Image 1 (tube, rainbow over the protein chains, first blue to last red):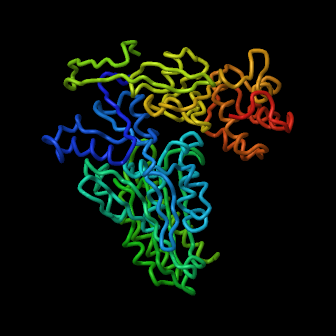
Image 2: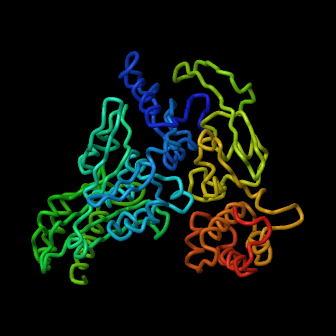
Image 3: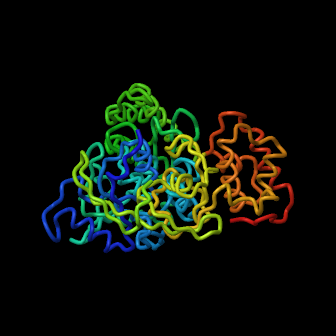
Length: 303
Length: 185
């Protein structure tokens, strides 16, 4: 069933302050009491998730705040110690950025594999995070790279490690008056970068344009025969995009022998919590996740 | 689509409560012509084009951004018009299939190639295919077959299969090196 237009309100914010002011009003921060959820402004960026619900008549009725035109939320800037991506960076902008391809290649790969060109032109990194789908493609890459998010409201700005951002299915640390404005990726030293291995693999029903059954991102820095700075994160295997610190701990500082790999696969199997749904089964997801871990670690032998 | 005056505010009681719903005066440039229409801000660009502007060349397939039948160029970039709320099209330049041919008498080279190679059958996917091909050839004038496949990956055809469509795009970039009729948008 189609959406009933009169149940929706929508306005465009041209500046960050304008957007934050509207969000604060709804949250009861400024003039007047907090509004019930249906009267609060919900941000809409590229629309590639929300408008799908809207077309199907499933987007909750209420007020939508268009933030697409806010220039302050755009741009990718490079500093010696980190790269900042504006929350409205599109997948097209991410995939075309040469330094990201070089130092954060799993994120580039995630952008390339998120939908088709028309979706990549509108879908944004901030939107992908805030939509909080456990099956989203960019979160596992961001988790692997120790991303941090800057959240801003009229009350001030704060940084949150991305690994702590999602707290439950579609639950997150963003308060209703806050916007994600930037995603920061810390850069490794030149020496570490030289020895870093990146791995990103999405498994779906078909190779292109399918929502993931399992999405796996991993990275480590080679330290002679040993693995260091091990990062493992998965999508579609838990209520949230999941970083796997217990599996990482098995591998950190270890030589990836077959016994070590088997132990890591065992731990990974218990650390993820996949479910049966329309796209796959928990058994398939667990087996594929463990196989992808093996494939990832096989890269250690190749580099 | 309401045709009420553009400054009108309506208050109606619905199951969700009483809402005030201003319409907007949407100004955009469609196929080179400055256009104004009064629409709901959440109306889909697809519906604005088809129903308010009677540009029915843009098709609705899936309505969820999977099939590309509704693809148009928004400020030169390929987008699914079913996923763009009207207020995000404010002040933009839109190219639909109606704006691709330079005149009623001449086809764009991509359109001509689709005719020559049998790239269209029922025609529902064709407008989106042609705009996706235009967008591809703008950023990549001599694409490889792999690049054509990727550029058109968001456009589904349920009639012919894709071989003739890919041949059409290859033909379009072989047709002549010069940017022909109408140029690239």
